Image 1 (tube, rainbow, N blue to C red):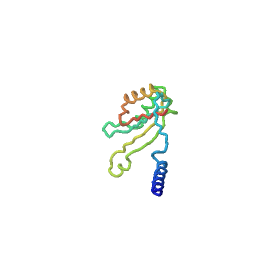
Image 2: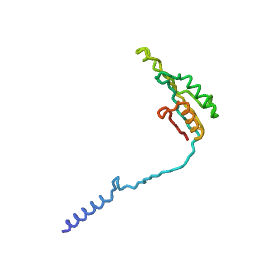
Image 3: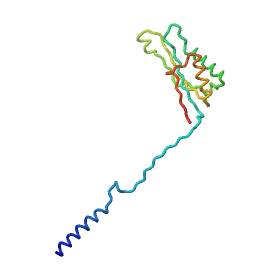
Image 4: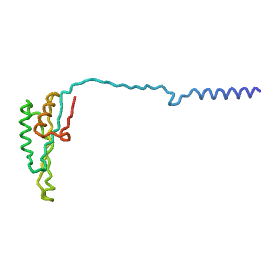
Length: 143
């Protein structure tokens, strides 16, 4: 009987000591989540402008469209020398050699403006000059 009590006590002690070990799920941890919302006025707005010749009968050259655009931007008070940069120039010259069609050129520009009013005026001027198209102008805002 004494051995049976000792065995029972040993088994209880064994299970109680096993219950003291913690697994990974029971270990303490900290979980943090948060969000923030703020209204920020951008101080640099980059407008991507693409000028290309259309494959039509009364085609306007890229150079002519470029000079019209530069005059329009200068009339808005934008320093073209500082704020207008050429990003890419392209043509379909390789197809001209193979197919004998006319060469169609295109140019991409990046225009930096400092406020939304000037950006809106640029969009309106480009719309007047028929340069803008929803697929040809992209607005990039940096804060």
